[in-house]
Image (cartoon, rainbow, N blue to C red; front, side, top):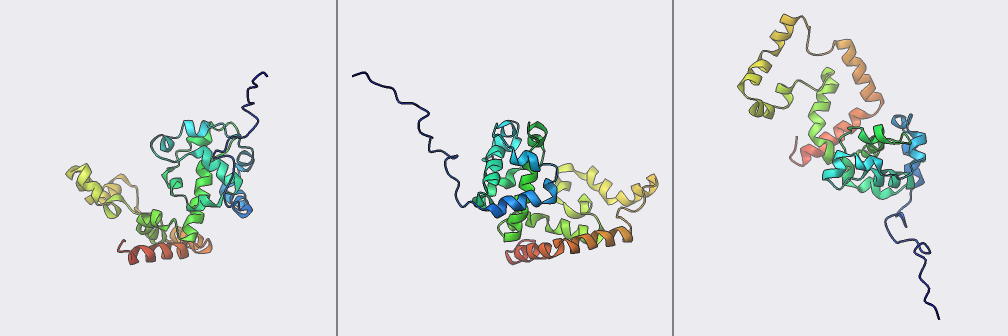
Length: 216
């Protein structure tokens, strides 16, 4: 009796592609309908899992974040993506978007997923450090100049930088650059947008949790 070799393709390997936990069609719908995905819907739905996004991703090189895996899980409606902290390793360099042959953008997918995590409360610790900056943006139309918001920079950049920042308004006046902050009308427009989109409410929630935890 002749020994027959098993067909290596007869059985699909039990790997990460074999099953998707907690499929949620609502997750896919929310990603597709998010305005930020306007130019990337077709690319998102036609992802071929080639891995080019991951091969060029700086975050994937040094962390556990995988753009290819994130794209697959998002398209599969994998609800565990909303509990995955690795999406916060992405810092939006858009290398994935620029290299994707299908014009998908994992960077944009991450923006949508992060927003969902913030809404649920899970992602709020990741954005708490920016709460003061965002609040200043709401009140004055911009996040703030470095000597107001990031005093630790002075230690790294030295006395020359601190002296420059101490006289920043004077330097701007000499150069004819005008006020550092936007005019009041522009600030009111920013505030209207923040309030209409619910950003101010979410900001209050983030600031409240950070303060309760002994943070900002």
